[in-house]
Length: 233
Image (cartoon, rainbow, N blue to C red):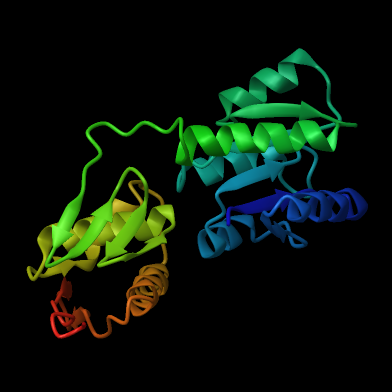
């Protein structure tokens, strides 16, 4: 189930958008605090963002640029501004699409589905359909899927980056610095605890297959993957 983050300070519109999206099977996040947008984005990892321009303190153009430091997920601007320059600025600052208010909810759903298909679905690029196999634990980077025996699970983009490094290196130790460089290829500061959050998440993903204690913490060095599941029937 895809997760949509709604960054809109009009409470009534935000609530109506969320209700409509949930009818179509999406999970929604309604932001009510607009000074912690990046922290919430990193924590929740939405698949797509609906972003207003007129927001408290900083405008949507600013927040779009900040999100782009962490993610290439689709960002659709929703705004009452109809000017051509506003739409150009939205695209120049990292947005993927622009919808003017008042809008048709059906149009919003259609655009969301279109962008999700392009990035994650049937229209997503999949050159060669790579797979990384570590003792039967298989990761498909282009589909962002993890497979073990007859089971599979979809994972988020940041989880995918972690799994790609850990599975490729196998039982070799990978430093925290290397993992952080892979996940956040940026010069801005990223809290070291953020990596801990994602390590916990990938361990939880493995537990869905009944795999436990596979990601070992090597004190003072980093992490490595251990094959702890060969006895699993």
